[in-house]
Amino acid sequence: MIQRVLGIPPKRTDRALVTYLNEEEMHDALLAAPDRATRIGRRDHALLLLALETGLRVSELTALTCGTVHLDTGAHVRCHGKGRKERITPLRRQTRALLHTWLTERAGAPTAPLFPGPTGQPLSRDAVRRLVERHVATAAVTCPSLSGKTVSPHTLRHKLRHDPSPPRRRRRDHRPLARTLFWGSDPVLMCSVTRGEIRWLSVLLPIVRCAPM
Image (cartoon, rainbow, N blue to C red; front, side, top):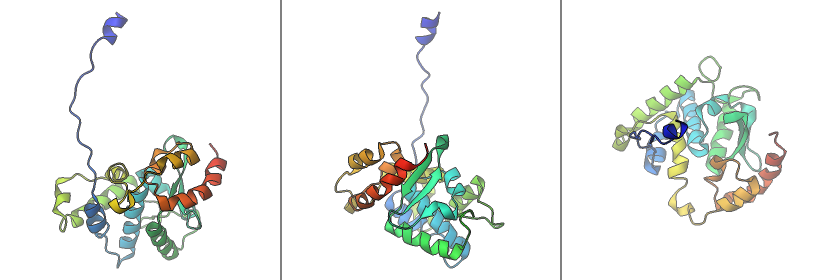
């Protein structure tokens, strides 16, 4: 009987295509949508850029505090991800500069949420979803291709898988070296490593090896 049950073929179902954003949709449209003349707009812009670059989950983004962002040599954000694993995700120069500006304006304590809501508490998952939908609708006015896509906070994570960096920086694959440094334990950390970032990967190595498992 067990063999007969195991022999039943699995049911075939249609799989929806994974939506992702290209460079024009991300940088020329979505990141330009928030009104940076307002504090909320600057917060949203920083959140979107960080989400696109790091591939953090919504729960990880909303749990970030001012103290989890490190902007010295080897700039990175530290968070607890799925499975309660501590993750360290590197930051590029543009994001580092933007977060420095936001942290200066934010002027929060190390334990204060990095992206607070109106009451000063961390943004909820629904708040982040509405934030993304609002800015996608604004961006679709100048980028019609966004109108045909269902974009959610989870969609921003697929940017790293489908379009990890501009073509001019995809000259050499340094992921093998990164896997050697970090034991390949975090695919999200590996997927956007470029030549210029290898310099400070060795700086992060002692931090990762000493982090509690």
